[in-house]
Amino acid sequence: MKKLKTNIYIIYIALILFLVFSIIVAINVGSVDVSSSELLKIIINKTSGNDVFEKTWSSSVENIIWQLRLPRTLLAGIVGAGLALSGVLMQALTKNVLADPYILGISSGASTGAVISILLGSSLAIPFMSIHIGAFIGALLSSILVFVLSSKKGKFSSSSLVLTGVAVASVFSAITNFIIFKAEDVRKLYSVMFWMTGSLAGSKWDDVPLAFLVLIISSVISLVIHKTLDAMLLGEDAAITLGVNIKLFKKIIIVTSTLLTGIMVSLSGIIGFVGLIIPHICRTIAGSVHKKLIPLTVLLGSLFLIWSDIFGRMIGSTEELPIGVVTAIIGAPFFLWLLRKSKYSFGG
Image 1 (cartoon, one colour):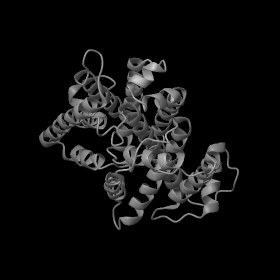
Image 2 (image 1 turned 120 degrees about the vertical axis):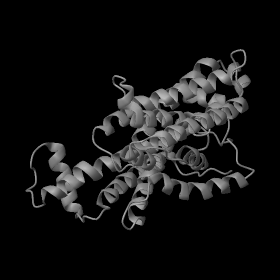
Image 3 (image 1 turned 135 degrees about the vertical axis):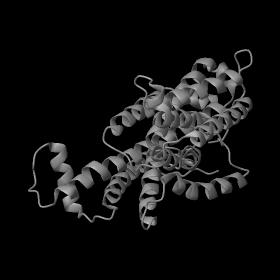
Image 4 (image 1 turned 30 degrees about the vertical axis):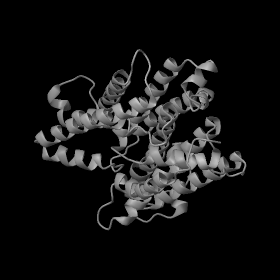
C-alpha cells in the first residue's frame, strides 16, 4: 500500500492545530451556549488564578465549562491516545494486524477488576481499592495469564498469544457478567452498565493528571524502544539476529500496554476499535517505522475519541449516546472493510 509522501512533520503540525480546534469545539457542545470569547476568558481566568477578564457570565456557566466540559474533553483526548498507542504496541508484539488490548484479553481483565471495585469494593473492605487500582490489577492478571499460558519453554508464538488472549478474555467477560447478574445495588448496577458501554460523562479534573502521566510515560517508553518495535516486525529470528533481547522487550511491551489499558479503561469504561483501527490508518500515512508512527497514532487517537464524544453528545436528543457505541458505529464498518483488503501488510 502506497504511503503518502507528505512530510510527516507537516502532518504532525496540522494535527496539533486541528486538535486545538477540536478541543474548542468539544467544549462548546452542550445545551448551554457559550461564546468562544467567553470560553477563552473563563479558561484564562481559571488557569491564571486571577480575574484577568471581568466576569460577565454566571457562575453556573463557569462551572459547566471548567468543571464538566473541559476535563471531559481533555480526558477524551488522553484516553483515545492511550488506547491507540496500546494497539500499536500489541500489533508490533504479535505481528498481527488484528491484535489490540481487547483481542489479547487485557481490556476484559481491566473491566472485571473495575466492576469488582464498583460493585464489591466496599463489601470486600480492601484498603486503597479504587476503580483505577482494580482495573490495573485485572489487566495485569489477564496479561500474566496470557503470557504464562501461551509460553512454551520460555517462548511463545504470536498465534498462541492471540488465541490464548481470546480464551482469557472470554473467561474474564464471563466473570464480569456473573458479578453483574448477582449485584443487588440498582444504583451501582446502572452505573456499571453505562460504564461498560464506554462513558466520559463522569469525568473530573482528578482523573486528568493520572491519565496524562500514564500516557506520557508509556509514550516515552515506546519511543525509546522504537527500533526494537521495528525489528520485531521482521520476526523473532531476525530480531534476535539484530541483537534484540526478545524476552525482555516482550515483557516491557506487555507491561506498558497493561498500564495504558488498565488506567484508560478505569477512567472511560470499555471503548472498542480505537486500538484496532487507528494504528491501521496511521500506517497508511507513516508506514511501519515506529519513530514516526507512535506520535501520529497518539495524535490521531486523541482526535478520534474527542470527535466520537462530540457526536455522542450531539446525536442524543435527551440523553447522550455512550462513546463506546459511537466508536463501534464508526469502527465496525471500517474494520469489516479492512478484513476484505487482502493486500494489507506491515510493509513500508
